Length: 128
Image (cartoon, rainbow, N blue to C red; front, side):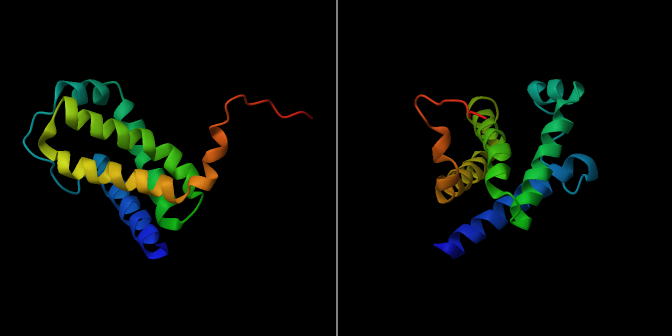
């Protein structure tokens, strides 16, 4: 199990670093020219740079085994949005997107002890 978690962490980190850096370094092409209007809109607004920066940050954290639960908190919403984009707007990479989402869910499950406390029904603030 430990080997699977390490492999999943490194693989997911590598995916997010490479695809995040592709925004600036254009390491490879992701298909035909002319992005979906949604992608053009968030790219024109500058929001895409923020998302790609967070992908690189979270990916490096996973690769370095540095604050892995925080990296998963950063990357889980991105992974979810990637999957939802594939389901509702452009299914051309849906297999890869499902794999990325599944690995993210697997890692959240593997590190569940760090997340379970946020699911407290009636949380009370800390008293000083």
